[in-house]
Structure formats: structure tokens, C-alpha cells
Amino acid sequence: MTLEETNEEDVEVNEEETLEEEAPLSEIEQLRVDLEQAVGARQRALADFANFQRRAAENESRSRERGIAEVVRNLVPVLDQFEMALDQEGASSDSILEGVSLVREELLRALGRNGVEAITPEMGDEFDPNRHEAMLQHPAEGVEAGHVSLIVKSGWSMGPLVLKPAQVGIAPSESGD
Image (tube, rainbow, N blue to C red; front, top):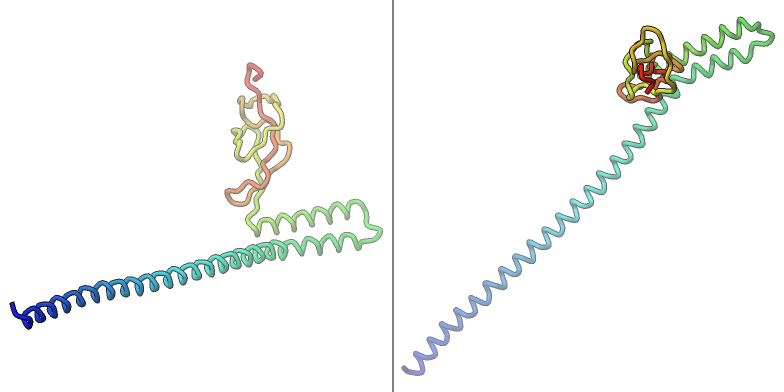
């Protein structure tokens, strides 16, 4: 082997080594670029999610305020009725009772416009622990054990949500349990 041949081989080997060294560097650079893009995408996604959470909280707050405002808007006429009743000087007890009755009707209409309904069980209805609150055991003729035998106070619901259960007495079992 001559010196020229050796040099040519060395040159070829050096070129191959250089190519091999450059290839991993470009792969590393590509990975760095990919990492930077992934980090940027993650930061944007986190910022988008934080903005979403903030907007959702603001929307919830606005919706709650609008709901309360709607209820209050419906109750203001009831306050007006009270004002009119209180402004009556020298009114008879009958006219005061009539005024209170009108105010009650107005209040019931306002509650009804907001989906609030009275829970009014009937004697003999089956006791429903989701809608009734048992206050006492009260024997009643013709009422089966465990059924409503006395209505103490009406309850209130808004759709499926029970705001205040109806207070009732229930007929005891024959054994007195």
C-alpha cells in the first residue's frame, strides 16, 4: 500500500465519520425543535384552559346574578302590595285580612313563575321520605299504617328539588312501632 492509497482511505473514512457525526447532531437539533414546539403547545393549552376556567366562573356568576334578579323582579310587586297595605290608615280588620290575602296570592304567583310549587299531601297518601317529614305518629280512622294521617304544614319544591318537605303525621302500625 502506498502513501497515496493510505491517504485516500483515511480521507474516505474521515468523510464517513464526519457524516455520521453530523447526522446525530441534526437529529438532536430536530429533537430540540420538537421539544420547544411541544413545550410551546403545552403552555398555550394551559393558558387556554386557564382562560376557559375564568370565563366559566364569570358565566356562572352572571347566571346566578340573573337568576336572583329574576326572582327579585317577581317579588317586588309583593313588596308593593305590602306598602299599599301599610299605607292604609284606619283600616278595618276585615280589610287588613283581605289585603294580607291579596299579598299572599301575589307571592304565590311570584313563586309559581319561578317554578316553586307547594307540596300538599292528602290524608291517606303514602308517606314519601323524599317529600315529607314525619313529625309525629297520629292514628286516624281509615288510614293505613305508614300513610299520611295529618298535615301539619305544607312543603315547597322547585321541580325535582325539595326546598322544604311537608310536615306530616303518619298513622302508626297496629303494634305501635
